[in-house]
Image 1 (cartoon, one colour):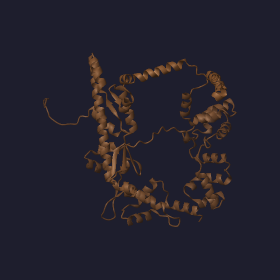
Image 2: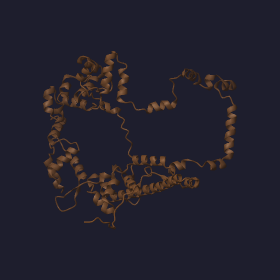
Image 3: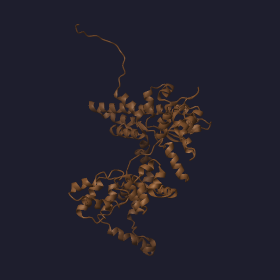
Image 4: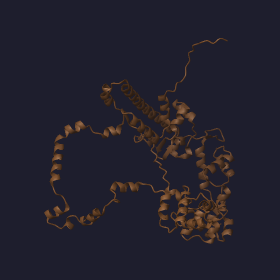
Length: 494
């Protein structure tokens, strides 16, 4: 076959950079959107926030309309500058003792005199208060007060650096002894000193040791408690009968010991973690309207107010001489207009999807989780006439504030569980809620097994398998019926 040139006509979707950016804006969270807009404003002189524009007064208008007030203020400042307003001058003029005029002046003067290189202003003090103290900094401040030899201090510093975020030691004593070429008991001696520092439980090598250190700090580490810590797997299985025999205590003493265990902190170093988590700002607010319906509106505090400064563009555009300057201004104006339209479209899309979610899940807002209906992304996409991928992007990292709390939009999408008879399907989330309610209301003499829960749900016309009940129960962190029965019997003293 000889090569030849042919022309064909076809249709295809071209993903321009602007279209890709618009799609990306849909899935950005509120924090990510603020960061994106801040970056755009920084590189585009024609963009500005609406609140910033309102906060900046017009300088020419202020000067013209307030000229008399301005002159009066300047005159007042000039007169005040000529006055001697020192404490001693006022004391002489008022013919009173300095202590009576300024009671704190005598105490304040020596402090001002003593200020030197180490003094700091109020702003610096505020910065120090705002600074987050890390676990290692907190421990190093205490280690400095310990009487350690230079070699021991080096070992202590290395052990502190080997702590994880929860305060547990991640190296072995043998490795430390080999690294410093010292006997292992030397490292053990330093570790014993470090384990007395606050918070109690740091420098532990296991959960049992962490709890033992905390109990020792409050003088509650007796032989029975140590035996309990040595058999934590039995505690996890709730085998209280075996624990009573191992610890040599009765049921009442064992309950007291368990209460002590529950008050301990298994992660003593986690309190010093700075997660940097931002508070959730809801994108949509749902409230009850005057006519009894639900009012769905965008949160005004979460809406990014971005304006295109066309006045500034009109001022500087005539002064652009080179082609590069004209092209730059043209691109800035085009990008600014695109961003403004994209944000508006994003807000309308979020509101449309949220309104349909509220319409479909009306029973949840009225009666609670038990009336949550099954809902899929595809079903909602058909209702709002959008693509399923668009619904997926809109509902990720978006939150809705309701009278029942703040929920992520994804919370309202749950799988469907068939009814045992012909009828409506049930939401998986509502079934989980029903299982938890049944277990919370059970008594020691009648602990529900997974099979009993299946039978109870079947009586409510919910067709569910036993393995599904077990999966839901484990996902909610609920123990098995055998373990719950042991715990309830121990609590009841049976």
